[in-house]
Amino acid sequence: MQLLDRKTAASARGGDTLAPLAREMQNLGIDIRDRKARLVLVTKKLEPLRNAAEEFQALEWTQDEIATLRRATDEARARLLEVERQADAAPVDRVIVINAVDVTLDAGAAQ
Image (cartoon, rainbow, N blue to C red):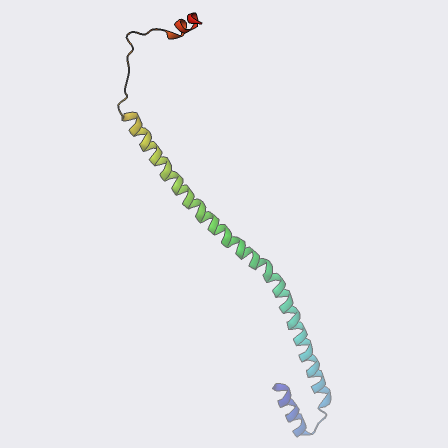
């Protein structure tokens, strides 16, 4: 738009407008190429950051999963301790042998 305004203004003055306009168009072309090159560079630099962001998200999910598993492990250990306490507190049946005969000797003599 500025280029068109400059062309119009220069035509109205009646001066040599081709050289400044050509120079302006050349500068605009250089600006466009420079911006495209910068865009390519920024795009290349963004790709590793995107990968890092994905890896960071995976790390957070893994850490959350580890915390959940640790809580489950702690709960399982607490239940195990409670069951062991109950087993230790339960009465134990005992058998007292008063009279016993060794039957293995008798069976060996019969053969």
